[in-house]
Amino acid sequence: MKRRPAPHTTRLPRKGRLVITVNGKKRSYAGPAFKRLIDVLREDFGLTGTKEGCGEGECGACTVLLDGLPVASCIIPVSQVSGRKVETVESLANRSLSPLQRSFMEEAAAQCGICTPGILLTAWSWVKAGGSADRDAIRRHLSGNLCRCTGYQSIVDAVVKTIKKRGGR
Image (cartoon, rainbow, N blue to C red; front, side, top):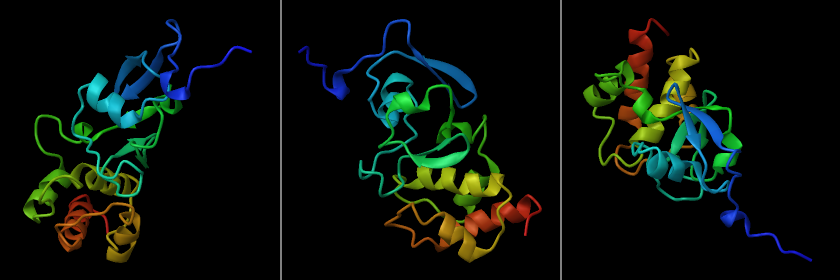
């Protein structure tokens, strides 16, 4: 009986490249099918804003938006995102800081920076979906993102500030 290669060595067929929309641009990938999404983003596409914290999907540092929803890119094989839309922290700013990034800066919501990209994207998913400025609801939405530096209050303040600037309550 012929043995199959281990999943981590499986390569996509030459004609079977994955096409992923990353930050609004179609990107092609033809490496190992089970390579982690975070590694493809950082190593193959040069998008180094996404950070790795725990490598187990527990801390939220590697959060990206997949079809608009926050996911841990360190536990998702790239083969699962074929034909889908991925947004990284690089998508937030276009020549200048986004309103959310500006609020984070004004409220001192970022310190060491490891968790910041993941928290920004999780917060952005809340803001973009029309989430309220209710502090408890924001805390629940951000509960999958761990931060050891800020104590979260300044992060919640920044999200509230952004929602209010956008006319939300």
